[in-house]
Figure 1 (cartoon, rainbow, N blue to C red):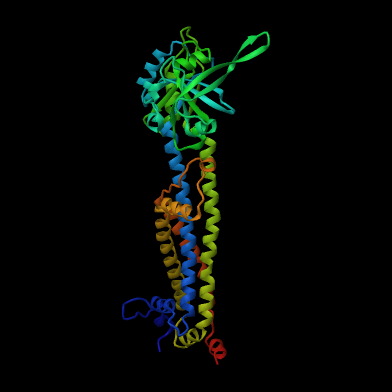
Figure 2 (figure 1 turned 180 degrees about the vertical axis):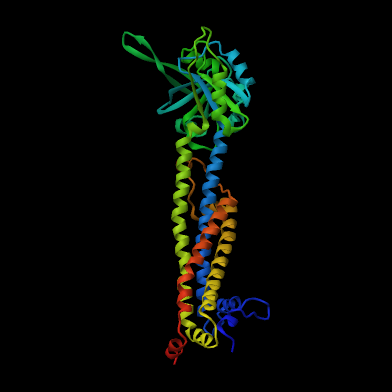
Length: 436
């Protein structure tokens, strides 16, 4: 008979510690009814499902944020620069200066105003941008997003318009159809203020993949917009594309400072806006939602991890006779505690690894899975009117996977302490007496 310390330090034929070998034997739970083996599997499956759901949800949130950012930067400028006064005259020298500024990849003039579009009985408000089709490619990929027509059709004096796909559907118009534009500026008459109107011909339809943008934006030629909104040869401001989108706030401010004073030597007052500010509330909402989802789903993972407690408690109760015999043979309470800690750790590790693999597989194929579900159920699960985009992207980040795996594993390990300490406190005489 070995002493408690000697028994605790014994090694099996494979050279593994006694506690590890005993934990492995209990993990397999080779009993006649196989009940404990089933319970161990349930513990592993519970942790795996919790981890997998957390990986999938965070990956979808990451994909949603990245995809939306990419689409926003694909069709909108990284920054805009406008004077606080009404219109910028003699803007061409400024454009040349902006294009030479450090960090600027391209620049283009624009005119902007809110207007009303009417087609038959259909009425919709829209944000009208006057652009130069030849220079628009310097700041956005709008030309590549056309589903019908071309931007070149927006020639000066043509009074043609490019509508977003959702806006065209709202107005029920297509290429060649006419829409009536009502401007905020009016003309005084004996009957009062009469809104200025102009009939426009639909020359192009674009599809950016973002419902809100396609529903609320329309483009006309820069010269036509200046004429409609009584700016003569002036513009509203400049649209900028920068080399590093994340440096847009700094670059646009440096550009504004670099333009210097006006012709009278007075400092110019600029209104600068970049994509991080224009969509700040939305991206902040995504980040907040991601944090809340992580906290909520972490509770689900924690509950699954604490299933290890019930699994080990049942195992301790089932093995009371074995524990009593081991204690009479000199196995120390410390060795018994380490045995059940190792067993719970193994269940947690298997559950975490299985969950990561399952979650990664689902996240990597989530778009195809959603399409299959839509086909089987006959419904459209991803509505662009609600989610801004019409598909479910996914981006698995190793940092998120590592954070999820480590957190779930730590929770599983902590769950082993209570039943392991209970097993260690089992007295041999008491265990064997109740086994009679």
